[in-house]
Image (cartoon, rainbow, N blue to C red; front, side, top):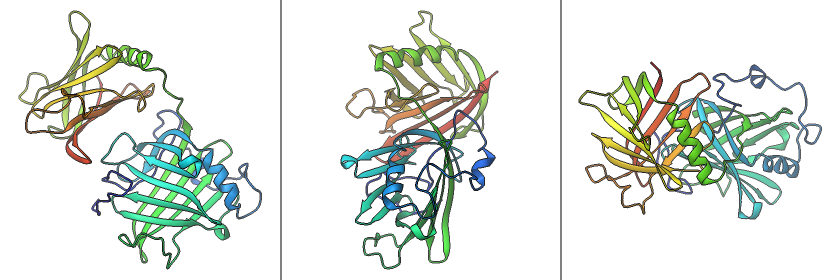
Length: 347
């Protein structure tokens, strides 16, 4: 997807998508989400819920969600809804752990209006809640011609719908238009929010125990450099203090990631043709089945000493069917220097 880089309020991104769904690791959206709900949500009855009512309902979405999106970068995505500015702004952040994909929607009150502003790779968009075309559980947003506050550097029209269901699920449908032409169209299905993570030491301990269970031989495929087929081994050291992941063992492409405990932290160190990288478990960005690792700019061991000068970071995601997805990269600021993703199953 080609678009203009945006530097305002967002660190950049490669895709224009929305946020999140689904309880667990389900690969398909519930069919009921694709059809109009037969039961009204617990908001104001009748068409056109008021701005105040919609704002109150949006505020209840604060938290962390995961799910899937139709379109590039999908199907699975993560989203955070966060209240800022003393509760006067609600921010929906998609792929918050991946700077190259990160994008944001800012919901706020503006007088009698409810406004949403989008910041992403294709440009900026601004839309206003349209009560006339909304229902009690279906909230429509559209750009207003001649809006003086619309971003002049990105004269695109943002149009979207948020639909709320009584079972807590959410459906979003957004378009970014240029005149009568739709540049991008995304739908997302949002479900069960994730529980908060626990304290650092306990979380590092739990993730370490989970990593140890991966010991063995794996096979699958890789997106990016060195793909598509890949062999992977996970093996503990003789003392059991480290776990070594070896990709493409015994070949010219061989590379390793060494996982080990360091005090209360859990560290991942990369050694391979891409350079060297060191990242630490990010407690705030992790959960039971999703382990995020971040290189710290102030860590003297985190910067790659070779041609790659960026920070090492990535995620390991466990699926209920036994599959493991790894997504790793070297980044410099908001620029991605190298990126590889692999999908593996136990051999």
